[in-house]
Image (cartoon, rainbow, N blue to C red; front, side, top):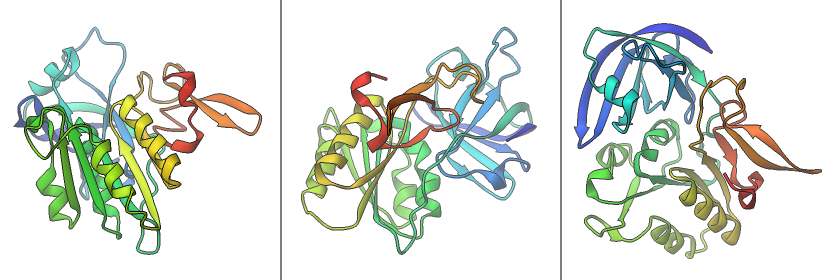
Length: 261
C-alpha cells in the first residue's frame, strides 16, 4: 500500500453518467491485482473526512484507470476535475481475484452494472478466455462490452427492460450456460449484493467454485473502522471479516448470506 499524489491524464464521460478517469500513478500501478481498489481524496471536498473507494478498471506501466458513475457529492466533484490536476491516492488495497490460467477452470465473469469495472483487469490478465455475462437495468448501463470482446471473450448481455440483449436478470443466461453441465467452470462476480447472492446460490446448485467482490461501505479502506464487515463461515461457526482487507473478493461458499449484508 502506497500513498501518492496522482496526476489526472484524462477524465472523460463514457456514456450517460459514467466517466473514465486515467491517473499517472507510477508507485501504485505496477502492484495492482485484479479486484483491488484505491482510495481517493478529492481536493475540493475539504469537509469530507473519508476518502472515496474505487475499483481499478485497468492499469498501464505507470497509469491506472477508474470507471465510475456520478451518483453523489463525491463523484460530482470528481467529474469536474480536469487534466493535470492532482489527487491523493492510496492503494492498491484489498484482496483481489484469483487470476485464471490456461490450466485452471474455465472462467465465467458475471457483472451487474458498473461491476464490469472490477472485472476488466481480471479478463485482461487471464490467459484462459471465457464468457462475460453483463447485466444492467437498461442498455446505457452496459459498459465496456467492446473492450471485453477485443480481449477475445464471449460477451452475453441481459437488460431488465429488454432494451439490449436478453430481457431479464443476468442470472438467467448464466443459469442457461451452467445447465450445459460442462466441467471445470468457475464464477467471478461483481455487482449489487442481491445479484452476488443469486450467483453464489447458482454456484452451489451446480457445484462450481465462485469468487465474489462485495460492494460494502469501504470507509477507511485499511481495516480500522470495521464498517465493512462481512459474516464469513468458519470451522467453529462464523465470524466477521473486513471487506477492505480480507476482501473485497471472497470465496462465495464462505459467506453467510442468511446473516444479511
